[in-house]
Amino acid sequence: MYRAWIRSKRAEFVRDTLRDFCLSQQVLENQFRLFDAEERLDFEVLREVLGVEMNKGLLWRLKDTAHHLFRTEQAPVVHGQLLGWCLGYIFHETMKLKEDAYQREIYGGRFLEFREIGLLPEERGIIGELSKVVDQTRESMRREVARIRFIIATSRGLFLRYLPDHRDNALLARLLYDQNNLVRTAFAQDYPALIAVLYGDRPERMYELAAHSLLLGGWEREAAQAEKEGEMVKRESGRAMGMTAQG
Image 1 (cartoon, rainbow, N blue to C red):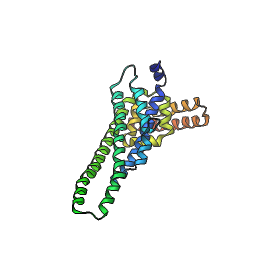
Image 2 (image 1 turned 30 degrees about the vertical axis):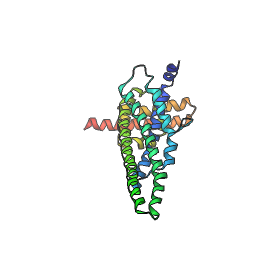
Image 3 (image 1 turned 60 degrees about the horizontal axis):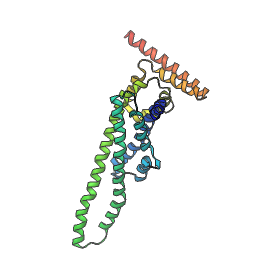
Image 4 (image 1 turned 180 degrees about the horizontal axis):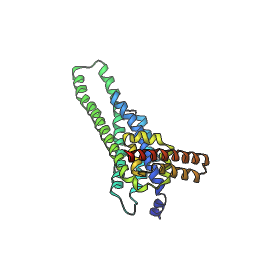
């Protein structure tokens, strides 16, 4: 019963996985840029994006959705299994990063206060030894940031290999249409490749599917707009193909 229910919701889970990946990547990359500039992270932001068992945050929900999606497929796809592993890894690595950020912010700040007060020679020696631990925490954060960035980049590549099997998913197309800026930002230079692997030489297909989904939801005006934009893309694509053929 559980597996059957998951499969019936598969289109939604695929859409939600891509959406929450893009949203999570945006939050994390903003934090990583802060770390690049100031060697610090906002503990409250990390705590919010992770959440807790009774109030799960964005990354926690992403991990759970990926778990449901990739572990209940009738014919498991390697790219999907690897993608699920990566999304879970990002969650757990961010958990470690959150703890290091807390130690850096709370205990590190208190440690700096110790160094500002008058100390006896013996106390200065202890402070010197403890400063090595503080430095290790900073290095640990640097390694965790690098690992998460690497896994996020790898995940983008895995999405390009996994999503083509879902090219007829109207909910996915609607996400790409409704939140195009979000997806473009997350995939950056890989965005054209994402559209290409999904819709090939028919990029207007995204708009057609999105319009269908919007119409089913009762959004008639928005559906008409999507259809109009799809026709424009189709004409532009036709001209481009014509010029290529002439060349």
